[in-house]
Length: 308
Figure (cartoon, helix red, strand yellow):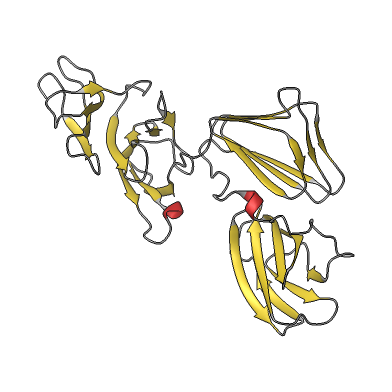
């Protein structure tokens, strides 16, 4: 690479031996940056784009992505894939410090648990979930929410945009996760007994895949109160453990109990049989709102519990 500086880091395309990427320091002709070759290094293209020109130290390729590249710099981690024009800051769960090395851990059982691991200068080792490329850049949402729904966007969510409306009915739960901002327009409404939750997270975590609608299927009932449910949960709020107790006869056959967090991700599932009451625990889970789904035969009920 005549005219380039020192090669700081190198990574290859996982399936195409002709494609290679390098990170270089400044040379007497070409500046420091990220370069790509599609002919085994015969020629190079600068793909640095909007990256800061300060201390680009390392690069790694996510083999499960569409040319997803992570680079570590003196000011943190940046990410770009083939669907993006510019690099984006990727410091969710990572410090904004000198990144000296990056590696990706590929979970052999569940790729959604793949992790980006970062070594820093003076701040130790860190890890964070890899970028989820299925998340849209922007999202405009409208309609009626009666079950559990999760909406996300890398940049902006517009609620009730384009002369539309969004109504969260009693028992409905609408979750919004955006990378930059959420715009709630005037035709957004939440009825008594409904919930709307918004969170800004520059790099996620985003809605699960499949997302929240799969949590409560079409045959499921609404979020029930104590007076209408066939079971009770107590104490609620809880600091850890809680009891699920059936109010009438003990259900016949297997009962499936699923616990979901606010984004709709299932965090626990168990089958019980022949029990009037059973103890469960949220001790290892963070504080927040959770939903308990109880399936008996062809009937499904869901109730809310708060972990303090």
